[in-house]
Image (cartoon, rainbow, N blue to C red; front, side):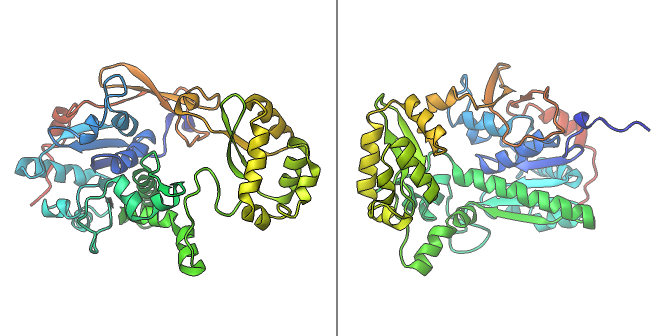
Length: 389
């Protein structure tokens, strides 16, 4: 017997994922399973997922949609239509995973409540992604990423003093998607052991709340919430970005006394500064942050970024460039992966963040589906399946 070539198989091969999805959280979740080898059927309205129209930055197509939807099949359905509802039931009857992120209660009103779907298909894993959860006073609130950042206090600990700021990417959507992936993977493993599927519930608010645990504990038990400090850190110094002579900016992070002494002796050239009473321990450095930052800022202003990078690296000081997105786009460490657009053109996304040893380096290039591109074929494939009443 010849063993299977690990390069020809993927972890989610033979899994069918059906996803009634829109925007970012659910599409990004189902895209993970498509990348892992699952067949993913994306259910859209006739006008398509509204994320298709978020922008036209990628050669006329939406950056969000291209990122979160390649490798899928697109099926347009009106689940209020009896025939289309029957087709969706036929799909779910064959599915391994069912994902949805419509408004709470919408799928239930249409006859697709998750517990009922699992009762019909014992091996089915369902995943409901919502803004605030399935119950509570905020259940029916609109829950876009920015609003969740505001409600959870994330903006209160970001930005600069007196100027709280939104995190510049859709972190709550992304985080909820990652949590949904974790939950579904756990459910797949439970199904492997028990033969029975289960339900997963994830909300954007719970995701943000989990991330806010440290500020929450500071507030409840320490009596004081961390304030936004820009590029600095509320309890570590020196820690932050400093302008260089050539108009660039470098960030440094000193985490222990050895690093502090190295910075003073090997970079700033002032060994006595390490034992200065104002800066002689971590608490004193935070207490006298303004004076310390002024000393470091004055030194950095007399050197170019490249020169400082060399000094910091030799001294084993943690540092990083405060890069623009344009600088990030040409970063030597940035990996890329090709994706084919609806138009047929190829673009380069950022590389998949998880690298598995079993994956072939010549991975097939995924495509972004057109609205309803696979509707006719899927209807023909599942039309004759008996799903009962």
